[in-house]
Length: 124
View 1 (cartoon, rainbow, N blue to C red):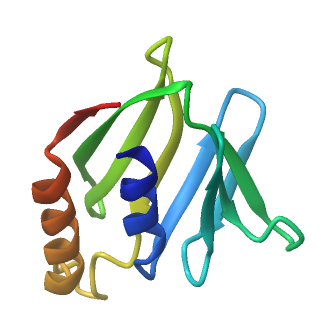
View 2: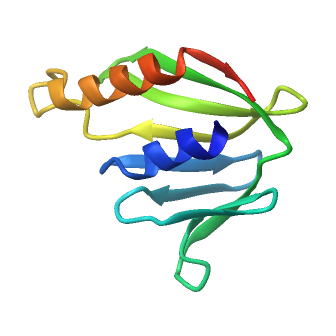
């Protein structure tokens, strides 16, 4: 189910995939990313391209759809947690508001459809 959720996310334009720790933040835009799985490793992006990531599917144990209120509007995303309960990677929907800070209906609909398909909290 992890591969299926990640596959659905990378198909959506304007999703930003983020890996973050105390020292480094890495960001990859979903636009035209490929995804494949070989044994336990899920690779997002082109292995020979300028940016890609490898996710150990055995260590990602859960995911949660999140909505947060921020000063410039609501934020929507999916956080993936490792076996220690730490956030390992996240996928955030970008361009979710217009210039007047109104919510983009199309983006919210895509988010809601994915959340409905997978449920709000997922155990892998």
